[in-house]
Image (cartoon, rainbow, N blue to C red; front, side):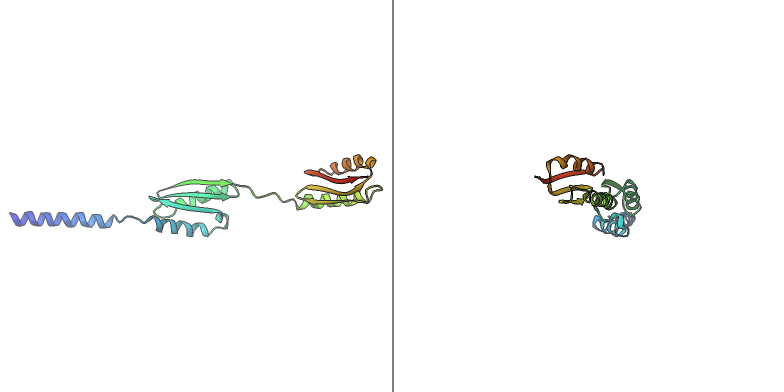
Length: 163
């Protein structure tokens, strides 16, 4: 009878021990490394970082649009051992390209400064902002500013010296 009990206890211990070893806890650092490797494959995710705690991946950083944000979420959710994803990614659209606007403004200003009375005025254009420098007669200033405004710059900075 004692041997049957002893065998039963040993069998129970082996069964519990086998279950305990088969339920191996997943290391969060390993999951985080796997997620980082997956994110590194897509250049749109270069501004995204991840932290993993209890197999919950938390995404933070920036992407250019909502599509990239959703794609990052679904990509990370598909990584093995990720239970859920907390998506704290911010969408920051890329800065506007003012190259075409600056080119049009420079062309218009070059034509304008050829006019009589505006030869001593110079302009610098950057990101749609026109900065005027040089000298002009007082009576010519309103006409110049009106013509510069007609080119539709984002802003005009008037640093002109009036004679």
